[in-house]
Amino acid sequence: MIKLVLSDMDNTLVPFGARHASPRTMEAIHAVLDAGVRFGPDTGRDYVELMRFFRMDEECFMTGIFSNGKRVRADGDYVQTTLIDHDVLVRLDEVLRPEPGMFLVCYPAETNLFNPAYGVGVSSAELAVFEARTSFVGGTVDEVPDIDFVAATIACPGGPERMERCRAIVAEAVPEVRIVSPIPEWFDVLPAGTSKAAGLEVLLDALGVGLDEVAVFGDAENDLEIMRKVPHSVAVANATPEVSRAARHHVGASADEGVADALFEIARAARAGEMPAFLAD
Image 1 (cartoon, rainbow, N blue to C red):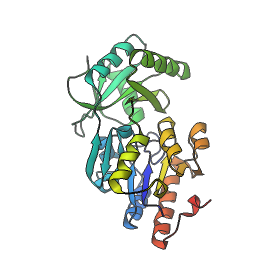
Image 2: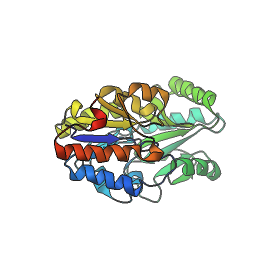
Image 3: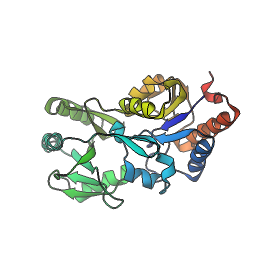
Image 4: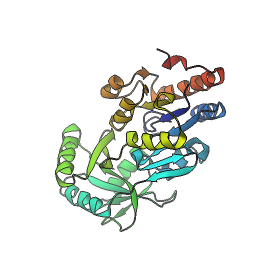
């Protein structure tokens, strides 16, 4: 039986560029919850962004893995929060400054719906490109503010060669972190030992749920580790080739509400006391 469903957000539950989950996706999430199955996002997004994605309906993320494992929430309680060291963020900013187009975006641990992110050392016009692309609200600052940050991302326009350049300079200059790409030209910054998979261990322990009782949906590089960890890993049709190969099961594309279809089936199967049909093979 499936007792917990976790889904990546961007390009999995929500099509890339969409600002909200669709009404049908919201209906499917509530069908799962009403059937007695927990649902939550496992995502690089944090609380404020999730409030927007889920149209202020917090029931959709009372449980989940946020900020790529830096926050873990179980039935409304935060059971883990990992902050990024200020010195690490300063050094990331320093190493990115000489690189044309690359810049750091920092997400405060305490924020609100009006300004959940700071673009560091970047113009408003440059920041606006990625605000529109990745659906966040930001402001520009000259240096990393001296406050607590729970997440950071790196904008890296210019294609695969520039992304490889970014990986190399970050690995050399700031070995305390690794960067993973959920979408082209964009990296999530993860402190060593932090990931969705590591957050899953904390979450399952808090909920008393087993690995074989979880279904995980994903599409991109930051989903690989958690999908390799669970027996019921599910890739959407638009997933990267590596994620598609890693996943044991497959559903329709994000743009076609493939996860919503799967959620309705999970709800039906839970009420019937059986495994969902798409996980039965």
